[in-house]
Length: 175
Ligand SMILES: [Zn+2]
Ligand SMILES: [Zn+2]
Image 1 (tube, rainbow, N blue to C red):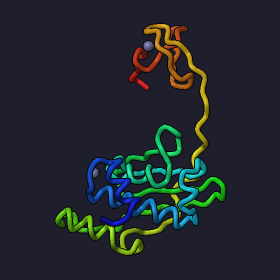
Image 2 (spheres, helix red, strand yellow):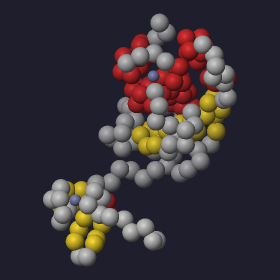
Image 3 (cartoon, rainbow, N blue to C red):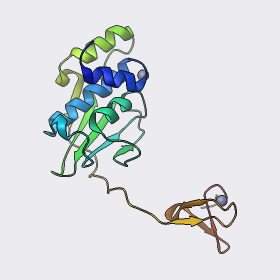
């Protein structure tokens, strides 16, 4: 319908929807704002912090190469249609924030509008609210003395001299 990138996003996500369209436009606008050509878009130097966990994130993953598994897609679930993109190689960052829009609009019409409007009309282009996140670290694993399962060392707790995973550790609520 629009271009190959959009079609790829739709097939990855499973359906076409206004939320996916928002993510698609935000990803392209973010890359463009940082001067990152599409050829570099699978680069691990690109980092995205998404402020929601909704449909649009699938387009972000496909177009920027930022994925949960690689550790360069992070979530700050504030329920905002806003995405911060960083380029570690230049230190530049940008926060792409959706402008307010009519949520009662017909979905098909809304999607068409999102896919065709000027990026500046859809989003504000702001400086990041945070510094670029630390690169994904490698952690040692420890084995839980209770259930025997292994977990990341920094996620374990100590209780009466035992190493416990967070399934087995009972939090102390009195502070
Ligand atoms: Zn969707
Ligand atoms: Zn355990």
